[in-house]
Image (cartoon, rainbow, N blue to C red; front, side, top):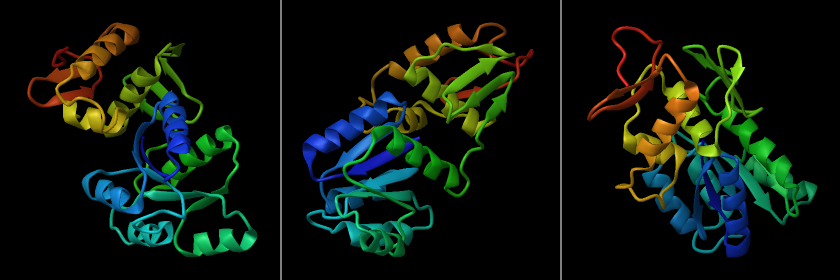
Length: 226
């Protein structure tokens, strides 16, 4: 899941980004509405966590811009303006959810995950393929009934591959979906994480690699390569 945090209070933005990354989300940050609009033109996001009182482009206008897009992200307004009238006005602008500051972080996580599931063409709650069952909400993954002990990035990588299956995901796709814009595009972090994930998934191998194309999950068979 990829999330854009739009918050002009830099300390809060850093806390939000760190907390969401700890939950396995790829997170980008913008500190004003103009920077957010630029990132939205370049990247595809599942959820935008949006403050209302933003410089450059106000959060209300940015919300309307997002809702007018064909491949729109879900919008969670996270703002100090928390009266019932503020909530109604925010939802009227097209926001999909509204959470007032101060907030309880576990509630924010649940709301973001719920919005991602509601996004058009969102992934199923439980992802299944090749003996794998992964529940993004409960953060559990098993293979043939045996629980997998995965790191945050390994879990997110497996989720991305299962969601895309049976299509291939390139290294660039995985960097965008599992990491974020601050990751060095020339790093070998994808290769290293795939290697660790393969070991934890065990035999027979189910992550197929096609040089120059990318990775995918496939049922083990004579045509598989690893």
